[in-house]
Length: 398
Image (tube, rainbow, N blue to C red):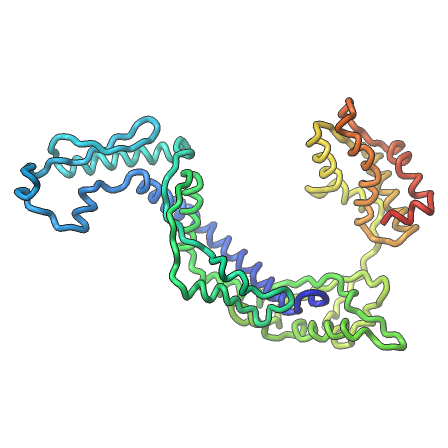
C-alpha cells in the first residue's frame, strides 16, 4: 500500500469500509424477516388500495345526504372481487353496512396474500415510488486515486443536504419486492449504531495484511537506499506504531490493529528496511518453497482450482475434460522443475504450464468430433517436456 497510487492511510479506511459492510450485513440479517413482512404489506396496499370512500373521508368532511344529487345515504359502497389470477377490482352493490364492506376487503386481501406467497403474481406489474440514490452531477467531485486527503466525500455531503428526489416506476412485482425490502431494511437498521460498532471492531479486532513489503525495501548500497521507497516506509511507520486516522465515519486509532507483512525478499533483505520499521514487526516467520505435493493440492482442492476452471471452459463447448491423478502429478512435477531451472515464481507457474498444455487442444476443440479429452502422465510429459528441455523456448515461458 502506498508505493503506487494511494497513501498508506487508505488501507485503514478500506478496513473501516469492510467492517461497516460486515456489521450492516449482520444487522440486516437480524431484521430481514420483519422487512419482508413490511414489504409484503406495502405490496398488498399497491395491489388493493383503500376504497375511494375511505380516502375521501380522510381528506374531505362528509357531505349531508341531501347534497348528494338525490342519492340516499349509504349507497355506492365498494365491492372487492379477486379473480383466480389475483386481479382485485372494485364494483358497486346494493346498500350495505360498512363493517360488511371492510370484512369483504379483508378476505380479498388475504386471498391476494396467499397468491403472493405462492409466487403466482411475480410477473404482474405494479407502480412504486422510489428515491433516487445518487446525482450524476456530483460524480465530478470525487477524488482521484492517491488524492483522498482526509477522505471527505463532497458529493455525499451535498446529497445529504439536498432534499430527496423521488420518481414513480412501473416494475414487476418481484423487482418491487426487492426494492421495498431494501427500503425497509434501511428504516430498520440504525446506521449510527452500525458505525459505532464497526469503528470499535476496527480498533480492537482489526487485521491489516501488507503484502509485498519487499517492494519498498531499498538496497542499501554505496549510493544509499532509494529515497522514494524509504519515504513509503516512513509513511507506513506511524500507522504501524499507532496513530489516529481520519475516515468519513470518524477517527480510528491503530494502536491495537494487528499488522501482518509479507514479502518474497529475492532481491532485497528484511535488514534493508529502516530500523524503526523492522522493530515494529518483531515476530518473523520464514516460509519454504512450494513442493510437488503443494502444487497438486493447489490444482485440486480449491473450489475454483485451475483444473475445474479448464473443465468448465471445455463444458461450454460441449466437451468433457478429465485429468488422471498421474496427469495432475506430472503437471505439478514439471512446474516445480521449471521453478528450479528458471526464476521461482511459486504457484503462478501453474498458470503458464496449464496454458501451454491446453493451448492447442482449446484452439481445435470446436472442430474435433470426439469431445472427450483425457490427460494422463505420458500425454502431459509428451506435450511439455520439449519446453522444459529446450533452453531457447524456456526463455519465452514465464
